[in-house]
Length: 248
Image 1 (tube, rainbow, N blue to C red):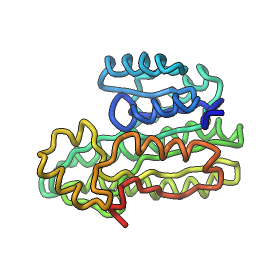
Image 2 (image 1 turned 120 degrees about the vertical axis):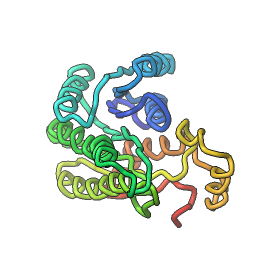
Image 3 (image 1 turned 180 degrees about the horizontal axis):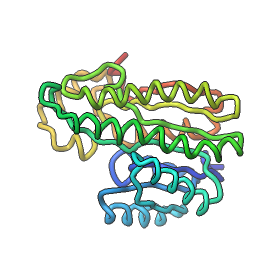
């Protein structure tokens, strides 16, 4: 039996990178997958076709999780389509990197809204269905930057640190009803975002990592499969670092 068979998962921000890898791995492990996209309809439609080609059931929804109203409608639509919701992966996020001296209020607010408020919105509206089921796994994508901070990323670090505090609070609040909540904190993951960096910068990162390589989106996806499956049935309120030992 596949690890996520008979489970319905929602992955936000799944049109590329880590989110896309999570959606693919969930399909491979037998889950039915709902996912969100926002800026690129073409990417969303392409992912839906790719997931179907893997033999799974998937449906994309164009939705902005930083909007409470849209998040509520999204959860209703997912449950209406699939009949249940067992796993949420709150992955949607952006960066607006610059030194704090130059950071605008809009840069700060937008990152907090999309990265952190979206996690609250999705979790708030999904919990009512999970409470009725007396089961569920909520997986929030944080970052090692939320643990150690990073110059030029005060907004991003604040949002990812906030996710960790939110995760632990939700684990305490919902645990008695069989709902688990954990965070995954990726380190240097090689995606389109990091692909534009100078190779010397990338190599500096690799040299600092004990495993001497950057992570792949699939490394994060595998951690999410574990946290979404019954293999982690006694794991809640934790932050799983997927960083090659960088913060060891």
